[in-house]
Length: 87
Image (cartoon, rainbow, N blue to C red; front, side):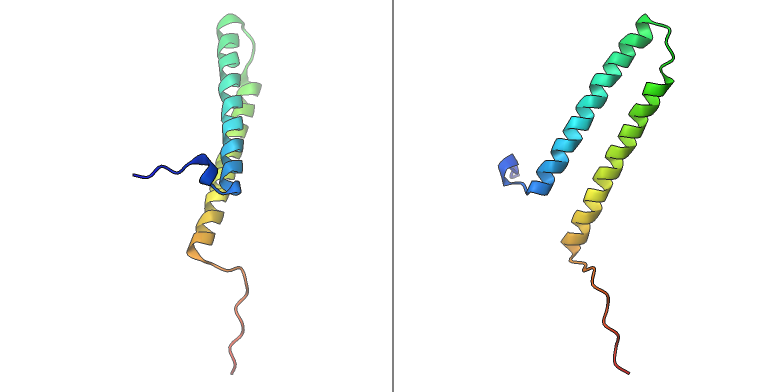
């Protein structure tokens, strides 16, 4: 099995990987902080939890849109309208 190196990836893939890594790191750090706050204090953490859920949904939408675009390109679909046929 051949492993694809990071430098051999297209710029679009690298950007998506960087965005996903940034968001996942933020989510992990925020969840650790919320976990500590939930144990040590009696604060209402529903607002921050809702923000994390929104960020996760944004990440899923980002990746789904990227994959849809890559699939469209891989299948060779064109966005040009069809020419009307002659009568």
